[in-house]
Image 1 (cartoon, rainbow, N blue to C red):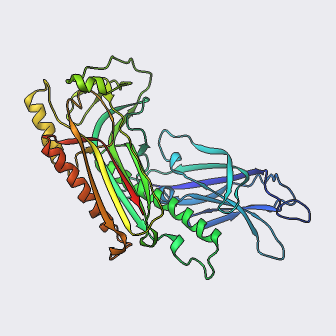
Image 2: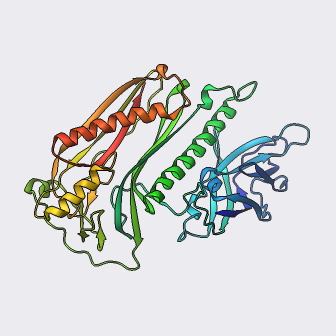
Image 3: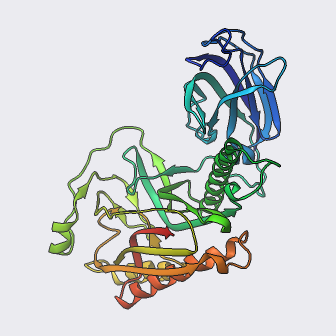
Length: 412
């Protein structure tokens, strides 16, 4: 789905003094996307420049729109020496790629320098025009929505809950690489800042492709984490629950929450606002949502040689008055999945009928024993090992699904 990205630089305000002789700044802006760069004119001797530039146009693929951030650099023009950097702005284009999304991003953005912090603001307008592309081999996942909330958003209804999705990407950490012949702190910081943004976009696109393969259109309970492994590299990983969501055209009439089949569960699980008209993967009707909120923790400390990964959740088991055939179909469908996990913590009553118990697993790895640090397969194998143990624990409890699933790491 090729498209056109259009950017307009309007104005700046509260810029720092870069010319000590005049106590002013001769500011201009570089606008970069992928390998294409445009520049505004220099606005002389002002801390509040009014560029009001033309529309800079980039012709790109939607894959690049998902992976690449729009990079805006504000500089001070010097005639007889190198231009001085004032700061940068990174803008994620992904919010403009949904069919129901806003058509423009505009407003004031803080100009950030990795050494001096916030250094004024810049007013920017960004538009995206996408062209239809029916190529089934395309590598973009435009249109897939991502929600960090662990319950179905109130303005949507769940048509189908497909299941667990995960992905990770690995790259060398610029903090431990020689970027220039003489590596300055700013160059190192900006290289890491840009790399993290690129890896985050790539990871989200790959998760979206998996959702499209399941014929879903959204990820709920999306959790993205960054593992700073020192010289072993930088890992960005994410998990979530693939769903098919429909946007509600008007406010639904909420029904009272159904009682849980267990008194203990009913007392311990707080009722959540229901999502009317939903159905789960086994097509049972859903009218309300109930569930419990589980604690999710993620922490990264100074990376050295020890890697600890942990997964946890609650094991759910079918029970109650559902028909035997429906139970068998549901159990069979879940058992066919590699990892029958759900990152959601709020479920409709027809989806979760019994909680078997809490399951968890932990693994410790030595980072200095990774033979190929750039290969993601090693980390994939680590997490597959933890998830397989979680699945085994759930099966030992007589359960065939894990709900409220989360993962965390500690590196020291």
